[in-house]
Length: 429
Image (cartoon, rainbow, N blue to C red):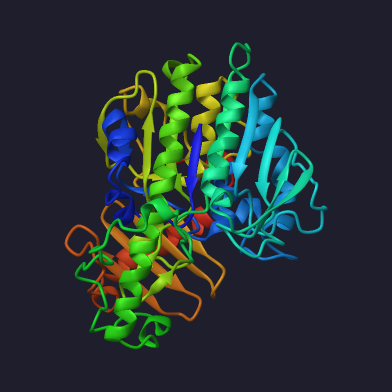
């Protein structure tokens, strides 16, 4: 089972009260998990295909060029068809792809899915209330009643799938994709009193004062006012409250798996499509940039034989598909750019592993970023550059680019060029 939250950054995930008991304390946490393009649609395409954006071709969210219409070209070579080919019974509950189902008809069910409950994001006018869903080809409108709250609806659908599969011989794969804590982060009434004093994380880069060495898009953001900070703190409280229902959903699913005798044989992955700036570097609910709070996402895995603890090995959204395929016994398709994380899940980390990764952004101007064990190097299409020593400066406050050894910069540029041209096996080194 794969659970993908929407815009869940690591600090927010760490502030949730039940997630440690449900996931982190039950398995392995990947503390340096990155979205290879930190934007919803491209990231979800990478999760489903195991490919970098330059290979799956989803560069932005919105139809008619991007989002779902672009991803349709890759649907046949993605997780659900691959898993179904070896006998899995598959289910999607929640968000599929931005712009679904533009150009295909609202009753369209993508290939490979036996049980389909997808949010019609191309036509919905709300994420949590007042939205449309496609239930196995039947389009249903949900309103604003408390029982229409989308995460609770999705929980009921997920439970139905698991319970209806009791006694069936097929293995199951479920992609559970709630839209929390994405703006506007509406929460269930039962959590309205929680996190009353919570604030957006006051890290050293919060409302950064000296941004003279940052790219122009950062320099153009004024310092946040007290009123803006108050609004940001309120949004963070809403985001945390909206995630409480996701914790409920996850707990109910785990219980149902246990009651139907499947939990002991099930791997559960919990992650997000991208992170978010919540005041860091003056960004407000900002993604599609190269800063650590945006590219960093949670990844927690529990299941048979998974060790309890953490690893700081660089892991990527493109690694999820090959990991799930190896666990299912599916031969690795040649199109996949990522590497399987299964050795880590079996307590036998590989003797060699990647030491860097490509992070791309195409939505608000192009930028290409190399995130290595020690460095973050970012090349904007405006010919502005950033270089941070991530060991000494984890909050990316001091841009070292102008003082850096030219040979070091040349090595980063060469590595970026190699990764931007990679495909399949050549991306895995």
